[in-house]
Length: 495
Image (cartoon, rainbow, N blue to C red; front, side, top):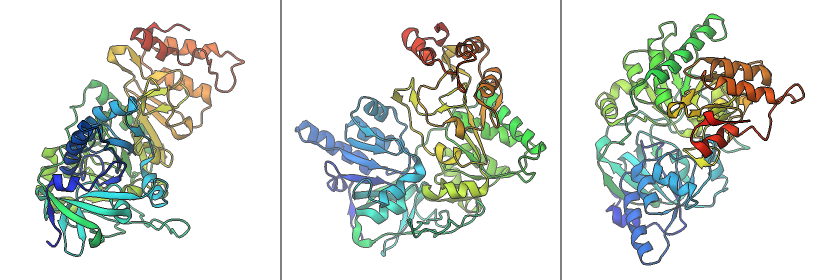
């Protein structure tokens, strides 16, 4: 190897206060493993001396505790985008110690190439192979690596020996031209390969290689419980009914699924729904459940930006990599989440909500409208362009103290115009072709928990016949939330 080998501490010396830094990967997979920790140590040392060190992090999505976590604890993050999901960083964001701006994942790469966010000083890229000419095979998450590699002034590589010589042929690296020169993105089915299995870096930018040796460390999702099982069963019931009605072709359509326990339970529900044929996925993340579905033959193929799987499943993929190279392709996020491709393929999008209101609007990001949870991620990329857009959530949480169906969402991420179907453990609300009042009755009767239906109906009546097309009563629209903040229980609401 012609590139110098650096210790993490030596690599950390390339980072300075105010630098824009690109991280490889998409969620934990493909994210740097060791250099961010050394940057955090440097920041803590400098802070103790009264000197500043905060870097601005641009990633593919969330990262891991070895990136966002250690840097947040060191208060070494100045700006963060486009998505995050770790408690320590969340605390910094909500305390304004870190400037976080939420962004649709498909948009960041192009906006960065346009220069909206300034220059990129350094990129840290995890790789599984390096050639002397700068050709690399990246890790199990791609994210925005092609753009960061193109734009960075300096590149530090992390060569992960745990996946060394394992992943060639798993990726499809494609960087579209920017407007006005862009043509079509030529993906016509999930298995289409339109780019290259490797990424060519400018060897003059590579300042060194840091060695690492670990899997991605994704935590396994909890076993589906009664609530998530009911949600999964309701989603499957809806899809089967759509097939029987002829609104989904008998050959089925590609599926997108968001991240988390509810999404995982929905996927497991699909495994047992024999009326649904074996299917393909065009999604941003593949989880443990999808790997299981591939091994069982239920998922025929999956296009993704990341294999976000637990360590046990990741090792299984590596041990059986020849099988999975015939089942999976990992792409940059601006391709996996591309609106043009999503619309062309007719994706069935399945995403999760923190809360939904009775008129069909969805909050995916902010607890009680103020505290950032994780971010919008790629849900908007898919929901706005899907053949059918499905959102799901439990009807209640905290033993009934919170209703996830409310009069008005406390923060709006997906408007009624992007939500076709709402699903909870209670049932299914089909919002297509319905006006606001009709949607409200559909959601209250089918998705709200029975203990909250009288309160939601009472709110709906407040608007009366003169309430307008969407009869909100503004001095009561957030009463559920204010009751929770005051008493810890939404059931104590009074209008």
